[in-house]
Length: 83
Picture (cartoon, rainbow, N blue to C red):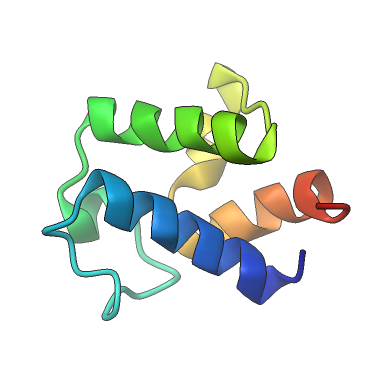
């Protein structure tokens, strides 16, 4: 997957979890939790969907790596390059 594909995958997951969330105008460098009012359960749902849809394991100690869309892509790129 390309970086754009990964970013779109994360956005699609967020849109499924928060249909009222507006991912069109998000700043890729700002914290997703702040922009979209994600709570801890929403965040865990994102992690679970990454595992379910893409077989990507994100250990709890790596959760801070998923703070912004840019950091998500940076973290997920090596894990999703062969998908």
